[in-house]
Length: 263
Image 1 (cartoon, helix red, strand yellow):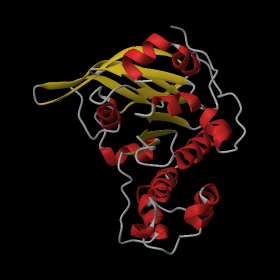
Image 2 (cartoon, helix red, strand yellow; image 1 turned 180 degrees about the horizontal axis):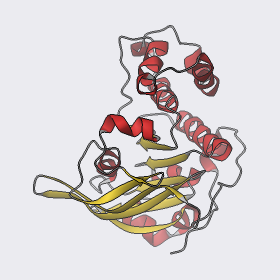
Image 3 (cartoon, helix red, strand yellow; image 1 turned 120 degrees about the vertical axis):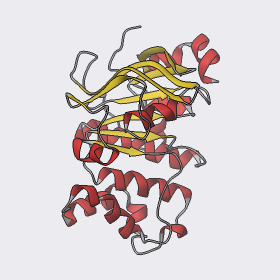
């Protein structure tokens, strides 16, 4: 199936944010290229020759049932899991064997599932922890994060354990953005959140992608919401890519949705 640049707007419209069409086409240079990536946990093969690309100014949604390999894919791309085959290319550089801590300086931020804040630290201190790998970060960059997330700006002096689930998700995304990534890997950001909060977070991602050229690789169990904000969808099944296509076309493919996406 061919890829195009169209994308839906359901999630963003719910948050009241106007969207423009995502930049780039299928022939645009890829910020991130994954080629024939395989990974295993002992005898269990979790990824089997996965190939995909993520471009500037686009959201690529990785979808599939539980156990499809979505989280393992992000963990392997970011270096937390070592692949058994294949390679990861970031901004034209092969980073397959790069240390995890080097990925930030090379332009990649990974927000794992689970909203991993440091509960005993304040919001502001959590953000500053996220800036450590970048060296000196100006106050204007912290202010930018607070401008993006007014909810956490209001709570900057509070300890993170007092935040709601949605506020914690905003905090970990803001912390990742302090690294000024070219590629943001985002794992299950909607998990356990109210639809209204999910819509706000997805709308903000869409805005960052459209206005700043960020590339987002989004893993989501909530396929309907993910496809409403994404440009491209990649469907995994048992560690393999089943299909890659324009997000709107995937959302409209009833047979594929029923077979792999559960709606």
